[in-house]
Amino acid sequence: MSHWHGQTIDELRGALARGETTSVRLTEQCLETIAALNPRLNAFITVTADAALAAARASDARRAAGAPMTALDGIPISLKDLIDDTGVRTTAGSQVRRHVVATGDATITTRLKVAGAVIVGKTNLHEFAFGTTNDDSGFGGARHPDDDTRSPGGSSGGSAIAVRTGMSMASIGTDTGGSIRIPAGVCGVVGLKPGWGEIPAHGVVPLSRQLDHVGPLARTVTDAWLVHETLAGRAPSAAAQLEPASLAGLRFGLLAGYFDTRIAPDVRAGVAAAVARLARAGAIIEPVEIPHAADIGPVYLHLVLGDAASYHAATLEAQPGDYTVPVRRRLELGRYILAEDYARALRGREVIALAIDRALDGCAALLCPTLPVTAPPIGAASVPVGEGEEPVRTAMLRLTQPFNLGRQPALSLPCGVSPAGLPVGLQIVGARGATAALLRTALACERALTGI
Image (cartoon, rainbow, N blue to C red; front, side):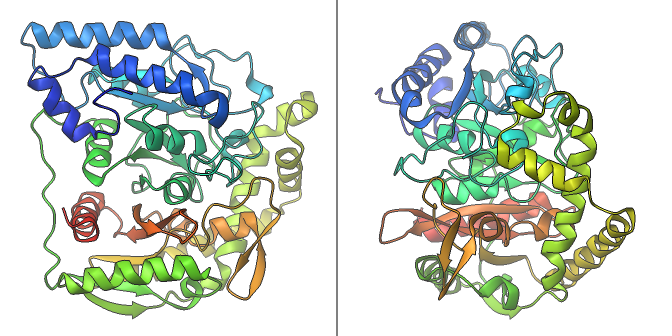
């Protein structure tokens, strides 16, 4: 591994500017890491080595010519394989789409390319983003980088592995009920779900168009900010910096009730320690609850099942055998969602969104675990939570899906590891329309937790 393995985008853009490395070297390092680790971890479905090296050479030529450079120019990045990249398969992790080659770029792919980012390939995912573990992929499940008997989380599991291991410096994922934050929390990286509609989803295979969010997975909050701004069409300059909020006197709502029950002891301990560190840094922590939280699961389920069944209606009829069995069964279940139940869920979503907004009133952000457990064993049907057991899918979605319904920005921040060495994530939730403020707050939290 080269000297640059493990560095952040923030550090690498400086090294590029000073001539201490080149985009070609960074890209070769990522490709070497993919070649070494992907046979075991299965993080990538498609690797675009030739196109990546060509983009890296073009970046180095621009820099040598003195052209203006963005923060991502020459930086290797990967795309979840729901996102179109011209001339490359977009499989959505399914044999249903094994021969589907993109004839154009997704909007965000174009923005990354215009900013000079180097796309090294397409990452593995739970089939059609319809799952939380990455177990069910038409191209084989992905594996946790710290323990390959465990799940990396999903659906953006390959993206989290890529970032954690240095296969790419950042990755672009999607999040319908937690699919950026869950793998970020499980794998120990930063995952940002921006506010709904901030990042265009044109050219991204949908799960639920009204709940889908597109966002970055990265090693640090600053890196996530640099990628988010680029995806939003505001590519930062090579010298741009994110300024942290001040934690002194900053008010946080610590989510209680629904968000503080059935939590595994190692997760509870990790989050409690992180919250205590924020308080020592001057933050004001107060418990808050969200009314109607018991309705979150049913509301989410009726919406996502109905939307997914509608999108997949034709291929479910024509290619049922090309789906993995668990995902096909879930999609078929969506055919039985009644119109009145769907309409009731739409109203429920608005009630939940307003309840979350009220909980945020007077707070810079809300805090809770990203998910109530650490990485589950691959293939596990249930996981221990507190004194009982809970289905894996329910457990992993329970604390993230409320903010897809509410459309608030939310970020998973690493906050330590369990006694078994598995990462624990702290979820930080901001107000609607305030992703920039959330990122400044998250940067302050990151610094308090890491001592940097």
